[in-house]
Amino acid sequence: MPLTVQNSNEILRKILAAMRSVPPQVYAPGDDTFLMVDAIATVSVEGKNVLDLGTGSGVLGLYCALRLAHVTAADIDELAIRHTADAARLLGVDLKLVISDLFSNVPSQFDLVLFNPPYLPSEGVHDATVDGGSGGRDLIIRFLEELPDHLQKNGSAFLLVSSLSSPNTLPNGYDNFEFSTVAKRALFFEELEVLRVRLRNDLSI
Ligand SMILES: C[S@@+](CC[C@H](N)C(=O)[O-])C[C@H]1O[C@@H](n2cnc3c(N)ncnc32)[C@H](O)[C@@H]1O
Image 1: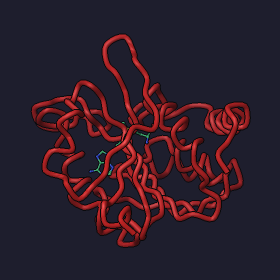
Image 2: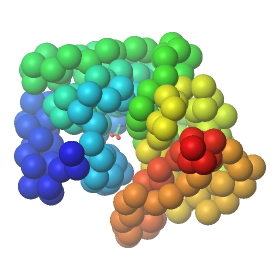
Image 3: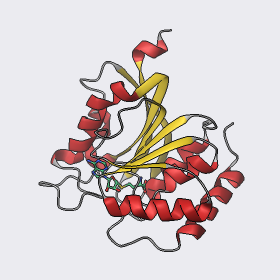
């Protein structure tokens, strides 16, 4: 079932309390993270196979695990995975944790894939938590190329995008996907959006 704002906030509070502090090298929960939580609150995840890609502090994966999803949390950064493992232990939830460059070590398929990517336009990647390469989209493009192999039938992805990386042009060249907006928030210097990405083949059935 989708969650009420009150129930969703309660789960989030529990996670943040269990985390206490996030190591400085690991991405700490921010406005983007919380917008993803708002988006996930709108769908039922109980019993679903969920992949939290680029898990960082682990908030999104832990949030789904506390809502009884079967969660795999992956990150390229070993420290992020260790931090998420500690938080999961404190919360008494079970997650599958994998060090992985995008989907490389997660060969399975999922009902829901979550990705809040590093999206700041950058020359090269100096900080993997925020640098998104050229136009902020290098990783997003790789993600969309690889996504179809990792979605169960009728599966979908929630992808966070920012006005800083020209999200309106994202669907160009991806006719195989349907993009829709699940959540949106205007901040001081950017607008964040969570896009739901689904394969058109699934929609026609
Ligand atoms: C903006 S942070 C989001 C963290 C967390 N999901 C959240 O919403 O707070 C992006 C995360 O992606 C991870 N990341 C960067 N490049 C990656 C890659 N190639 N494969 C997997 N994870 C990656 C970073 O280490 C970081 O934890």
